[in-house]
Length: 222
Image (cartoon, rainbow, N blue to C red):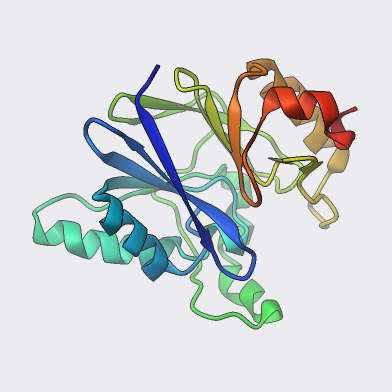
């Protein structure tokens, strides 16, 4: 089994699961969905001694991407002092551009501040992969919560980062003007569940679960 390690940092009032994921042997790491509170995320990175090489975004909602730009700025400054290249922001699919460009406006309705609009260094599409040392994340496009929502799957480690597609006992909201509940459920059934009942997934909020558990008793998938 791939030697993967994961730590969660709950950020913002939304208690969004920002994932720190790394290769145990090398400590080469990625930050998945830094939705806010970059200082809290940086504390976790420092405490674990991680060497962050990229920021991955599953989708463009502010509670998943609002802290990415500030986090990148802090990481890049530290890396520059060591003569290292900047940390790229990778993902989501280009169809979430309008959400990434509207983060600063969207935060106002929640009385929040400090979040920044994001321009990824690289958008991703279904079928691409992202390498982190010996880890390989397969990219799956699972829209319905947002048009450009992605799921990252590490096949050898049997773990997926599902963002706001699938939760323990629930699925992502689709009651937005751009949402589509039928499309979301179809994507979960056709792209995620076939990966295997043994796959553990880390959702954007709440506890982790497995595709097998959700296949059996998630009321939205019956």
